Length: 137
Image (cartoon, rainbow, N blue to C red):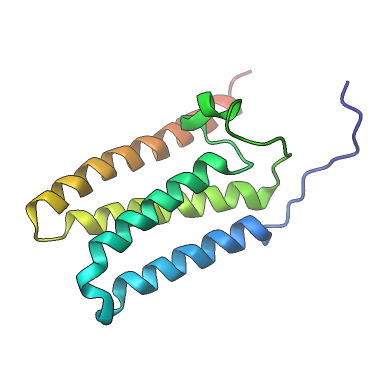
């Protein structure tokens, strides 16, 4: 038996969700800023790497990264804002991968296609895993 009085917080505005919204908004601003148009592909790729690291190290587990859950993540009970932050990061990463597909350079378009398949796989695994755990019994 676990001897704790922990109850999950259902507040959607926590540190994780505000960080995800801020990081996504900042990355989106830097991508659309005309001064940095030359570095758009590098900013998108860097943002996607940071968002993937955020998903792996988040307190709320992602179904697609479940094998990493026991080794990488620290012990902490996730709240609603942790899950909301994961969904925000998944959505922003998926949109950024679609932005790479629309670039005119061939290798960037190919990289965008690969990243879109990866992010769509993570989103699909999360949705199917959530449905599985919801209707398991």
